[in-house]
Image 1 (tube, rainbow, N blue to C red):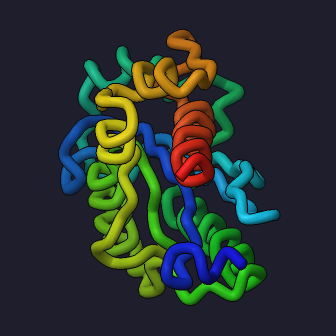
Image 2 (cartoon, one colour):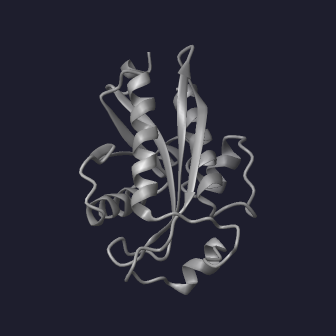
Length: 192
């Protein structure tokens, strides 16, 4: 059972697109969570949830970040929701999935996971949401896993080494990056 695989932790793959690199001063602009399922002693991709997020008031947006992510904050189809609503919704999704596998806590899996973890901790704090769905300090990082298994740390190179398709044109979308990171996580954990 999944609850026995990683100390009763449910791995949840997270990717954020942000308005900069400073978790205290730059907003989250997109969040995606890729759930994993566990069948026949193997991790498989489960449901993917993504939200475009309205920039939190009074936080700074670095124009260089928008150039990299190609996020157009004024795009009519962006359908952004406020940060607190997005965080509340993903927490419910994570907790339902966690309960279905009888896990005690979720653990954040990400590529450069400390980046995503620090932004999320700060966002939960500023929105006064008390129940952080992830372990408060432990993470699983595909940079480290990739370096161990493939000798690479860049996501596209790790994917190449593991024969996972990677499309540079789709990179820097929270949904795409979460899905690809989940594929890396599943492949490494399943192969070991």
